[in-house]
Length: 416
Image 1 (cartoon, rainbow, N blue to C red):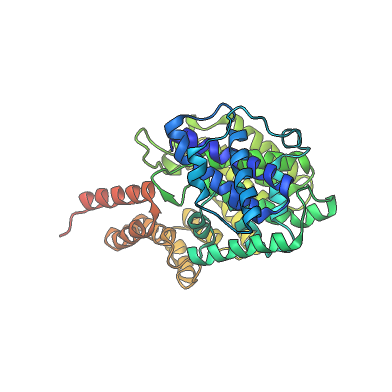
Image 2 (image 1 turned 30 degrees about the vertical axis):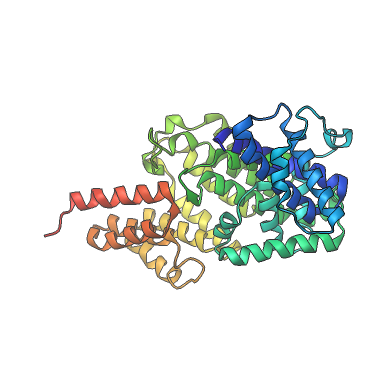
């Protein structure tokens, strides 16, 4: 399907799922039916055009499939996709009144529903990324740094747990909402990251995902305006997304942060993000998202790359490392240390990460090591790590950037 169609389907997916779950109550079966409806649309709409009321089209196809599943007592009937393609529903059928005037944003309700206490935190996040974010199982597995088969099993078990819990389609009470908030915020964080820097494929950025994450973060902020972490996450997204227009060149090539034209940065987004950080910092101790937002603000407020307050960034990453044993945070901390104390100090910090099974095979570790070796003047030592990073990444723009880097270094430093 064309990009616009893909974007529309991703936007409509949680709305349709919310409508079907609200009507039938069975999350797992409804999710299967909605996935089949989305598949039918992906095949049919490019040939026949997008219906006048695409949401109603998807709801009706999903309901038809769910009804068939219930009648046949079957978990799934993929053969019905062919019937949906051959006999499309009436395009102008309006959803029932209860589906058009839900009291809460369906996607936000789904977020909290998927983060039910019956689920483990990893399972809740994985299920929500699938149901609300529309990520594939492979993309979710990449975000969690686990094999795709493991993630598929996790999602399947999560859907069964939701069914067994009997949770209804409604926003939880305030006290229960607070208990689920951490998982909800982590879901939004992962959706945004996948949109801002796609883990695979030809596109470096997936604006539909990052925009949806920002929209949901705004909804969460409207619901919980006094939460410092909700404000911090929204600020982090805004401050990071503000650089989007400068992150790629005219041909889609990646432009590193220190080479970006900062005149292309979104000043309104930066101003809003800085305001959110400032207000949240005065309200109490900073959590992980607020601290990351503060780092993003330091980057965004520097008029030039050389004006960046790297000592402050090192200090903020030090705080983050005390909050979370996250190897990616440690990797970013090593880069910041290298900017302040020199590449040799950064390289020394990479030695521990090279033994960490969560990241030792990740392309970013090789890319950072190569970058710091290059900065040390050790181009010959850097090249094999650049090559390893290019081989490991599933992102085509990242691979192309690394290969171009390798070519330029070889041309500037011929052997012998």
